[in-house]
Length: 228
Image (cartoon, rainbow, N blue to C red; front, side):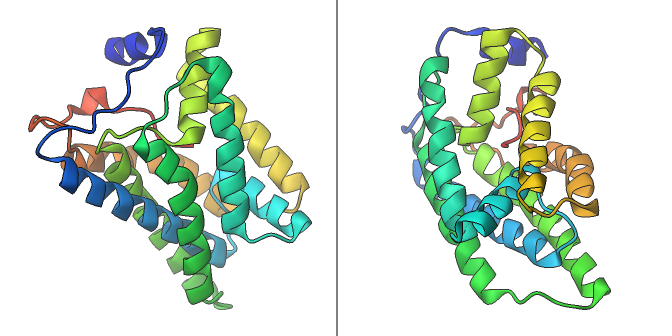
């Protein structure tokens, strides 16, 4: 907790390192994680049992604007990234890649994954989506090449306001979910299941998928916050 607090209170976070012999492996894991993240989003969307918090907003906006979900995801990610400027957050290659790759991946996956009508199949897609998202999250966070834009917004607000991570994150996601639901996004048991399960799952997976610039693995207690 002390380590996390000191990072959040630092005046300007350093750029993630792009050096070291492990860089090729870190980049491969980064992009694999981002692609899998997009696929996990598509699985939950096709289950129609509830989306991830930000995807409630993405889906609601996509329906209103007539855009693909991936396009909305990219645009919202870029707008959130602009919000980093007054918060003095520095993006890394993983941050910028997050904005683009996940949006492209979710559209590609949605084009390939049909929407089942059977409830057991829908539940299966939901469970698979949550589990795959945990793997994807741990994979791309574990390479330490920059947080996602939504997570950076949260950490920047925590540092600026002095509020707790839990309070700031909950406030952001509550506003996002409420807005998305009013716009027609799917809010359901899947949203709750994701919120409950994702933290513990990533906590277990992150030490196993951590690839820091040096060869020393990240300690569980030093794990960065989850992406939004």
